[in-house]
Every structure is written in structure tokens, then in C-alpha cells.
Amino acid sequence: MTGWTEAHDDDWDPFGRPIFEDDSTRALSRVGVVDVGSNSVRMVVFDGAARSPAYFYNEKVMAGLGLGLAETGRLNPAGRSRALSALKRFAILARGMGIEPLTCVATAAVREAADGPEFRRQVERETGLKLHVIDGAEEARLSAQGVLVGWPEAEGLVCDIGGNSMELAEVANGQIGRRVTSPLGPFRLQMVPGDKSALVDHIRTVIADLAEKMGSDHDRIYLVGGSWRAIARLDMERRGYPLTVLHEYRMGPDCVARTVAWLEKADLEALRARTGLSAARMELVPLAALVLRELMQGFHPKEIAISSYGIREGLLYEQMPDKLRRRDPLIESCRHAERTMARMPGFGKKLFAFIEPLFPNAPTERLRLIRAACLLHDTTWRAHPDYRAQSCFDNVTRANLGALSHPERVFLGVALLHRYRNSRAGSPMEAVFALLDEQQLQEAEILGKAMRFGAMFSIQSPEEAGALKLYPKKKALELTLTKRGAGLFGEVAEARFAALAAALKAQPRVIRPEPGTG
Image 1: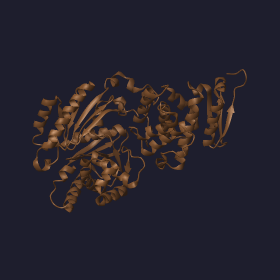
Image 2 (image 1 turned 180 degrees about the vertical axis):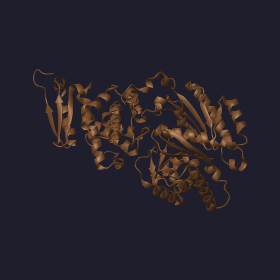
Image 3 (image 1 turned 90 degrees about the vertical axis):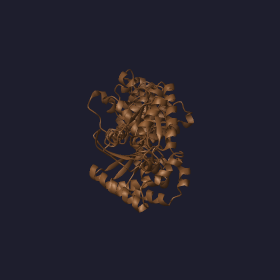
């Protein structure tokens, strides 16, 4: 994540005491939230308020609660029945998981409908769940907090589109600034009278008012909401993009314009079949695409970024201790993975210390990825040996990790692939490698081969067995062995050391201890 900086207190050290071991954080295990939106009703159970959300349970029903609200002023009867049925199920599931009470929020549809209060009473009477109806400003705040879960250093504008409204929130320096709500949800736009030209004029007028209130000088807009994610998935399809991970997917103004124009002429049903989008979601895509096009023209951002985190994650963020909020989501998630899945938890820190001399001039952003790779290097050991390299790559490139761009995902994936495999030639993941340039691929290979050597050189502490030193000008890689290390430096270790030197385009040099020395 570009621009990541570390805090100054000792507790921030990425290899310090894991914060999820604190009692205050452990007490938040199994946090359940329900989001009753205009289009969908979703229950998410997080496996504790760890800095990078772990989804223990996730279920969504496309209820369409707000369909027709702009015309009737009331909740959609069929949607109301579906939503109530879903909430009854969620309440039972929560009790079965030992999660009570659930935190339940309702947004535009329930807060604007004439029968919203009656629906809330019915829900509480029949399910025991209390719906907290939030206003537009609060909805914007929670969505922005959700973005901060994934991007602690997010700076720009958060735009959350729902069925009946669209919220904007300013975010910078971990703080949320101006917030505003608007009637630009697709359900509401379906009720705008007139032809398409009249609809576009309406959207343009609302966007101009939003730009006046929020300012149009934001370089990046973070998009939250199912309709935005659907458009991003369709953009991937148009471009033939090789990594179908929506979180942190980026689009520029030209890309958005081309995709919106493409969608206007495309067979949406065929696209839906190819991308796996639901019929209910695809029905709203054309309207959301018009809003996105006008949003780009009204605010002039340099790029947009898709966020898979929103209100639900914002509610989780609300419950995090402040010191947990300040942690690096990537490192926390990788450390938790090592703690629960590696053969020897804690070895990642030792491995990092051993190979760090190979990267003397690496910027903070790259060292952060090296730390993450070392923590993850042994987390797929249970996979069959023939598939460990692919399993490593798949896990990291498609994992639910925050604060990690797509190129960074691939960098980690390639490094971990080389942790288990000397060559990446013939990999079924070759198409994804295109997200990195040749230099980045080479650097990832070096990291992977450094881990491959260090991890087997000494299974307890490679630093106690020897020390690495790179001489770039002399093009030499030096390994100074201790007496113990000399005994560990067998045939396989020697071959892997030579492979590492070759990746560095350096000559391997081994310094053995003098007889009688330690």
C-alpha cells in the first residue's frame, strides 16, 4: 500500500506483541451485524474485531425492500415479506452461533417509508431484533469507516450507492469530514419522469449540487455498494482483466467512459451469465452506470477504487479499540494466519531478520510486503507438495486482505510461489503475472528464493546458523556460517543458496568457521 507509514509507539512494531491477544480485543469475538438496505438484507458475522476482517458467516437476500418507494411512499410489500423472512432466519442463526444481540441497522428505505416505523415494530415483535434506523449522514460515516478498515490511509471521497440513496463522505488522515446524502439510488431513479435525456439531466443536476457541497478536488473516489461492484466486475470482463478480486480494483476516467458506453450496447443477460451477477443486481446496472459516468464528469477524480468494505465493516470498526484501528491490516492478518496455520508460529519474524540484508535499500512499502511474505511462507504446508506453490499463490491473490493493491497481491503471490518452486514457467497463473513488470517479477522471485533457502536452512533460527550479505557492486552473495550452520549447510541447502545467488545475478560465496571456533 503506497504511502504506508508506521506509528511511533513501540506497540506498533509489526513484529511486536499481537494485539488480537489482548483481552479487550478477544472479548469482541464473533461480532454479528445486519444491514437492512433498500435492495438487500445481509447478515455478516466477523470472527472477532481483528484489524483485517475475518468473515465467519455471510448471507444476503435481495429483498428489494425499497422498490417503488419513490412512487408509493411505502415499503414494497413483497420486499417487506422477504426481508422479514430473512431477519427471522438471521435471528435464529445468531442464537445458534451464540451471538446476541445482533447489531442491526436500516437505511434509506426504512427511514423514508411511511410504514417504516410499523415495519420496525413488526421485526422486533416477531424476531426480537431491534432495527436502528440511521440517517443519510450516519450512513455516509459508517461507509467511510468501512473504507478505513481496508485503507487506513484513505484520502478522497467515499461514495456509497444503495437502492434508494447515494451517500458521499470525505476521508483523510483517518478522519471523516463532510457528509451528504442524495436521491441517486437506482430504485428512485426508476421513478424519474421523462425519457433517458430527462433522466441524465436529473442526475447531472444532483451531481452538480453534490460537487458544490463536497468540492470537486478529490483525486480518488472510493466506491461502496453492490451496484458499483457489479460495474467493476463487468469492466473486468470487458478488459479481460486476469484477477477477479473486486476489492482495490482501480478504474480511470477513460476506463469508466468506455465501460458505460459498452454496457449501453451489450447483451446484459449474456454478460450476467458470464460474470455470475444476479438478475436483481444486473437490472440496476444501467442506471448505476449513468450515475457513475456523471459522477466522474462532475468530480473529475484521477481514479476510482472499489471497496468491498462498507457499512457492515464500518460497524465493526466502531467496536475496535483505537490501538487496533492504528494497526496495519495486512500485517495483522498475515500474523494471525501464521499463528493459526503455520507449523512453527513466530518463525516468520526470524526468517525476515535473516533475509533482510538482501534488501538494504528497499522502501517501506516493499519491506512491508517482505514481512507479510515471511509470515505467510509456511501457511499452506498441509497442501499436497505438488500443489503448494499454486496454493500459496491462490491464497494470497484471492484472500480477504485489506491494504493491499492488486499488483501487491500478485507480488506476494509470485514470491510465495517461488518459496515452493524454483521456476514459475508453465504456471496456470501466468496471465495474472502481467500485472507486474519484469523488474517486479524478478524482485518477487528473489524474495521467494530467499525464503526457500532460509526456511529450510535452519528450522529453528536461521540467524543462529549464519548470516547473509549482498555486495551489489561486486555481484557477490556471501553466507557466513556458524559452527552449527556448517553442519546444516548440506547438499539441498547449498543448491538453494546457489539458486538464490543466480536470481540475484551474483556469485555465491560461503565462509565457513575456522576449526575450533563457534
